[in-house]
Image (cartoon, rainbow, N blue to C red; front, side, top):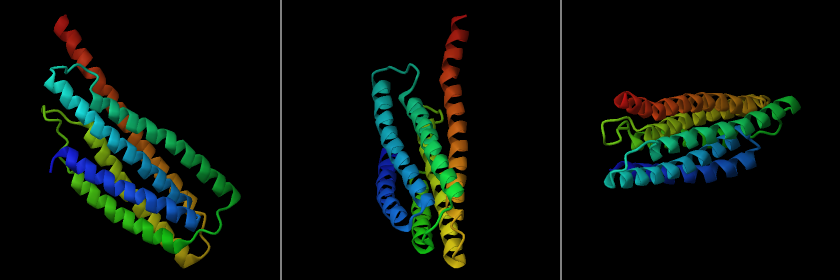
Length: 215
């Protein structure tokens, strides 16, 4: 299957999970599930943007327009920036819930949807694959960004499932839900900052090479 085909299939799985997570998050009063749903929604938009960027990059290759910045690099940068913005909202909501006291979180649906989401995202990670070459012998940061996002989503969903199990069996640890939401935000934020740094380096490197060639 081509890179575009793998990304399209991952996008379909992602959008199905978004609907499930938002519905269950509202019904279960779970901020961690809603946070995962918003994160997955951002990833879905990022995958769609990645598909568009790949199309632009291929058109540029056909027309001989290989000047930087590459559309795929810019897509990765937008992806990471969007994740950071969404993380701010997650952190604020989780902090408010911790301060006021999270009550009424239903552990069973949180456990079930978290476990299902983790399995689906692991499958999506395999679908996208480990081949992140852009076809010119260079690392495609755009596709790698998508793969890292999906893998992080799988880990986050597993954390949500664990918190749901703990809340279900203890019956009084509702504070764990916003705490897991904060953990998800921290992990995703770290990957987003790291990705931004890598993209900026990649965008800067060609200009340095051009300066060296012209000197």
